[in-house]
Length: 291
Length: 318
Image (cartoon, rainbow over all chains, first blue to last red; front, side, top):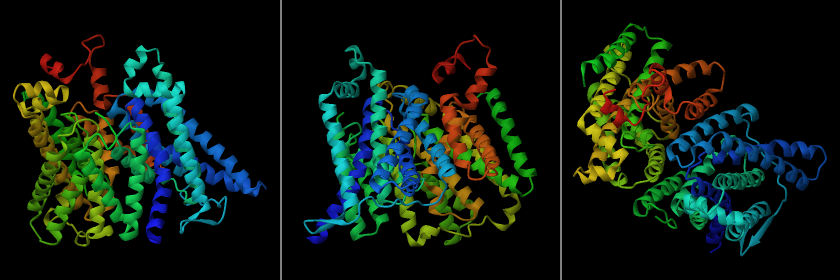
């Protein structure tokens, strides 16, 4: 029982990051019908900036939480800027061009990963923990740091859900993802809405990156690992579906934590990939997708 | 194909083989080998693109070819040519199984499943002990007599394969594939089995990928799972995209340009990936039809009929 709880708790922790990641992917796909593989690079940039700026602020005499907040703001801002540039100069021209945007994003991955390596160096960085200690939940122990991460992930997901359900922009985003031409006929400014959607997706990745920096080692290839898992989560859940992305993420995270506990991690990866192939064959539109 | 086409394709092919033959074993001849193999992989990718799908499983089929050739040579000591042929056949067999199941799915899913398949094959290779696990296989040598002529051999095989792929593309079957890309429902209405045509085309492309894998195994004499990551598929796509996907010369031009520039970029230090990435991004944004498309456009008189779909150009006899 103890072990089972611990495995589930670990799964949920990993899942929290996957959720933030896959929400962004599914949002961009839903609205622009593109797959942005470079999504992970927004995440990486934000984590890298936090890893560089935070020790700097901390040695300047700021208390740790303040230093983290400052560096996280810087990281998110940097990612948003990158997101805006890649949208305006790249993805904007390739909307609804699945192959073209896919190839562009693969090019961006190589380009950005190389640039990160040049700018930030190949050294593995670690960020001092913001809050120490562990919390025990029903006998399963969690570090407070990771609990904070899960909390932020849940809050952000809730906010996104509420925003999509209630705000005018959210409604416009949903309309555009169902049928962008009909949405335009209703007077929804599709171009502006698409940019909003892309930037919201970037924001989610950037926040996830800033949050992951203190709990994991930060390298220039950090985003790629999460990207593939987040992407698989989106496929399993159904491209373009928000609940699908959440369910898929948690599912993948649980498979990973169970598989990682009973077998070794690379067997768990094989299992995940095999599972995706099965899902795609049986239900190509994903668990929650339609059409 | 008509005489003009044979001449247009034949001259560069003979030139390439001659170049490989006269070049002494050196860094330059290695570079030529890599270009030839990369061009074949990119051409395999292009073959599948004929019916409108992007095969991200290419890396998997290249690795199947490489491992088959490696295993047959080092363990079973099969003759060199048999090992190469077996590599292609093995890749084609696996691709028929894989394609039969996955090519029924339309939409973005085939690309994604190819991605997953490449990862599964790579991870499996790291797990299987008799394939060498993480460290892979060593000592895959071409026969001693062929050592000095290996570059010529690679170039000849690649040229033959490219000619073969081109012949398939120009045949009636190739036209069926283009028609499937343009509108598969119409193809179905005239009684052509779309799914079967796709699987056959996929198998031909993967045969080429398997051959490329075996050539690479013999060229490098070592293979490891790390060589066949998704990056391999991405690179092949880069060659194709930069070169231009509308002509069989596209993959060759792209591979030659990127590998030559890449070897120059190596002297800049770790900038290789930046370089490749920038090349892909720029070519998608600036020249959507690649080098071949751009040169074609420059050669054509301005104001002439604009390049339209391949089918229409075919009808015009261009």
